[in-house]
Image (cartoon, rainbow, N blue to C red):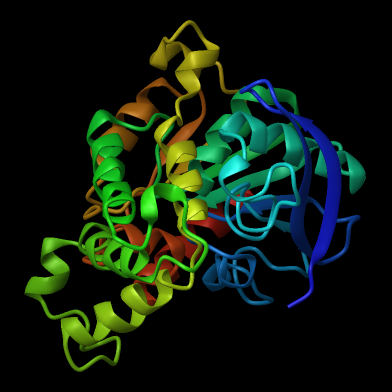
Length: 329
């Protein structure tokens, strides 16, 4: 599918200036209040937050100007897999959330948007919401982090080290010198990741049956192994590093509470009760420090992925309702 492309010279935090591009699509009238939504880990523009974007959904293109933008390293915007030389493949520089946010702000300006009505995102998208509100506090009115956090915990960081190792240790990764797709490594990555993205309760209640699968194995093979081996290994590793370094405290003397307290935007914080790495308890703590924060926990067995709109229909009804009410305030 063809999307728009915004090209820019992007000075990165690592010291490199990247001739970068952001791939994005827009929905609705640019005169309407703008809502920016970035992609998440292994998320692509076409599938981002679809359960909440539609004429009858909370983020209606009839009411809002919706901007969906690809994450750096996420295969659609500048990434190891698509960047021209001299920054192609293994030569692609390190990118972090700060780099993404500065690029997205320039995209906003390019589109003529002075201030966002809302910045919302799922998982890594939610972390970007916290970063945007921190780096550009006067340019966003509301944020909605779904199944996310303002700071990547040590537990979350170590989980990512584990899944990264499945790619790096595979025979076809060839210590990063591969020239053919890393099928063994990315397939293993999908298998390991699937267990973490779901929950103990998901397996216990055989939730795959309601989703139309014959077994948990059928689901994991279809939605995880086969899907993940369509990804470039370096892109997977690039995004994971960005995720690991997510922490808004670094902009406020490494003071987590101070960083959250400095956010001006109203926040609707929506964790999943059964998320195994963005724990709902972290969201409770975040709301304590936010000046204008509301907590709405998604009660689901679908773990982390419920926040992205791929849980049950009831999960999506709840999320849509909370967003609609938050927008109407």
